[in-house]
Image (tube, rainbow, N blue to C red; front, side, top):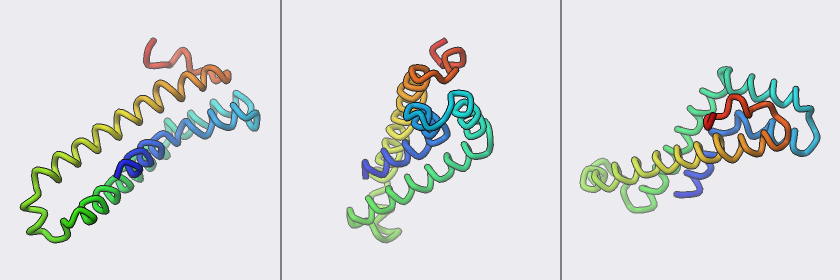
Length: 124
């Protein structure tokens, strides 16, 4: 299940990762990378990525509980506390990974490759 959590957190950060990667590899100029990340982050793509993240995480949770033998509504009612606790833990871990990856690692790497994100960084 944890690969679904990591994958969903990575998917949520796809608004900033492509520009950092392309600028870091020298395949895109800094100004084009900044424009790409601004278009993805401030446009509708971010909300689409968040929606896909929730769908990916839901599929992962469904598969996890299905593999645990919780296949019917009656079994889900019996294991309600475990389902709720696992779901909350998965959501918290996904958000924490997303926050650390997107707002710390990618911002630091983005600033290091020359993207003008230092002024808008959350630590300022």
